[in-house]
Image 1 (cartoon, rainbow, N blue to C red):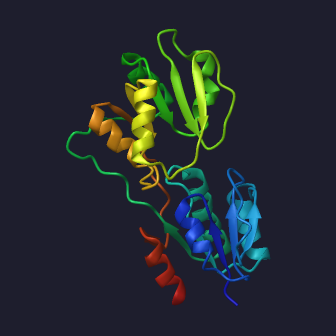
Image 2 (image 1 turned 180 degrees about the vertical axis):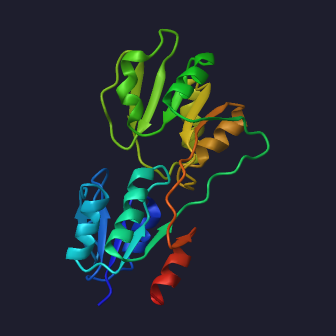
Image 3 (image 1 turned 60 degrees about the vertical axis):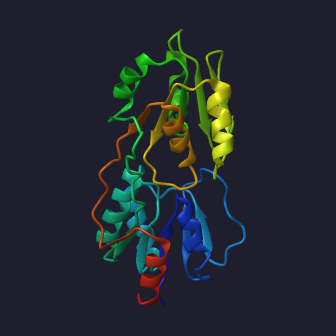
Length: 239
């Protein structure tokens, strides 16, 4: 019996998991909601790096690692590829295409937090859509700035930052209202390639708001790479 270990992290991973039978495992890091309506097994938590994942692969007789983690989860992707090598099984990956610059966009790529903060000096009302990372820097907010931070869940902010807990997909009308209400003058985003969060880019384009884009990491090489759920599902049928 062939068993797939599906490493989740993006919406498309859940779509794949919904097609898997009880012999397969859908693995989640534990951030966000855990689905309860799947036929396949669900595992929550880490593995202890590549060697721990490889041990799990051997113990559970996994035949294929399918990496459907977030495009910025570079360490997890490296662990998956290395664990596949150690466990002598193939590693496939579903990797979203990046968003592409369009006419009217003002994107400014930054490589890390230090570059981001330096580029942010020109602005006063940023909207962060990077997840939880900015929460570690709330005590560093300059007095002339007020941050709006959107994450999956609500977290405490401070007098210079409000945290909004919200999950996509986001409607463009709601994004327009958010930009207007908060008087957003710069958007900070990862290039996740997700259609669920793309409306914020459309609104930035409409309003002439610059976007500070966190550069995508280089991901580990794998045996097969896919860009759509349909392609993955087709490959699975012949695996």
